[in-house]
Image (spheres, rainbow, N blue to C red):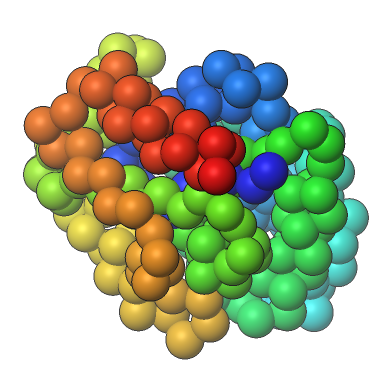
Length: 208
């Protein structure tokens, strides 16, 4: 059983995915962390972010079992990750690793930008989780302030909009809903409401 969850930054898909995985006893992978881990490896080695062969080599060495969200969530790592994520050879390397993860028993929940369209196009359940840019920026701003980081709402909004443009406009695996994905707009939904809506869709698929 593979559950594919896609959507833009700060739409709530990560929180939702972890909740779903815990509820069903499935393995969970935030595929965005695989790009962040690759970017961190480049930054740690003081290697350039515009050298695709070097970035591909780092991508091939990423250990999916050792992804630390607390470390990889740093803003500078996210910025670096969005630069290497447009590289086709990096994407190919990480997609292969993500597909291998998706085959784990008894089931998996993968969240990212291209799970339903590229990584697992045959997944029986596909969700596209979204929210308005303003709502997503407010969530990210509140999260940063809550964690003690200085933040400016307008700067966060501009960053979200720039990220959307980069994710949706890239030539390789652009962010978009799969044709058979269920749309979940969380702009005015609590995480509990989003979880219950997702659970109803997943239960329907499991009971087919």
